[in-house]
Image (tube, rainbow, N blue to C red; front, top):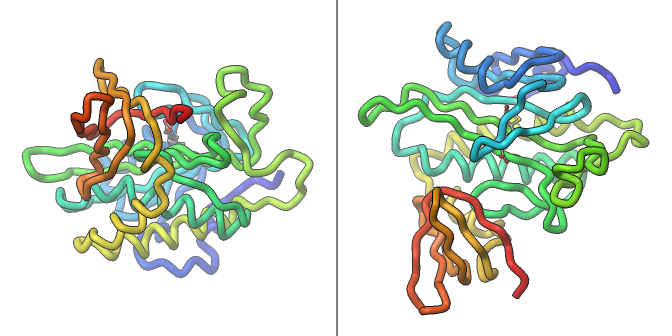
Length: 258
Ligand code: BTN
């Protein structure tokens, strides 16, 4: 597989903010850490850090994220208004869904809050790290990892739960088209803010979680029931067997058999 490069991503990219500055590294520990260093050095909004591979990729809830060569691992630097924060998850997941559809022709679903699934298996994960001081956001780093060419069966820890878009047998590298589509769609949605309503509606329409029996964990709390709806804040409403509706703001859900 060909090495990616910044010019391969930026050539013909029709954005005005996201991806105006692309930094490509063949190997990084985590694009999140490199993004944080770039922020300290005054990186512009929309700067994108891309790694050919990550040796210390991380996921949500302190999990590790596997990203050997052949996959997509990138972080986008933003300086958003505080009112934008609930929408960043929605923007990132919608942009990922769109980019996978554009470049791979595969339809995916979103599992609340921001896992991208193919037939129930995770193909893309999103990690957002915000730095907030008082009521001001100093920075947001949007980390997106897509399993483009991952030997899922070769990693026992994810063999049953993860999916990959292609396999080594395919000669055609879809990553450049996918990253371009991702940055373009991310920008389109980001520029719709502060009117987040349409972003929320689009995200809700793609959520596989609604109407499903779920188990949600948030910190030490576990809630089981039917996922009844989502709020514009991103919170998930779950109706338990006792009829009581609980709202989960952050955490993880497992879809259960009905
Ligand atoms: C998750 O589903 O738990 C989130 C996974 C996020 C992975 C991406 S890959 C690019 C960026 N750098 C990281 O170390 N993590 C994110």
